[in-house]
Image (cartoon, rainbow, N blue to C red; front, side, top):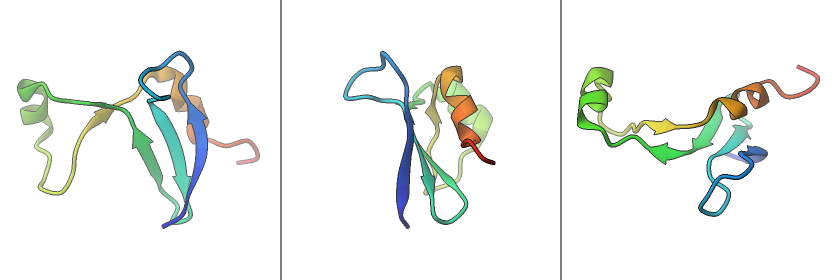
Length: 68
């Protein structure tokens, strides 16, 4: 998989997180804050091998790169 940096949330810490990447497989990679609240995770029923991360609303517009 190859990734392309799309956006870094302004004023986010540490080291520019959250961050959004587009892949060459027609998917997205999101770097964000780990969701650790056990009640929230239980509601999500996340299967083994997957995780949940949180990103701010201000990154959502970047899911649609210019020209798409």
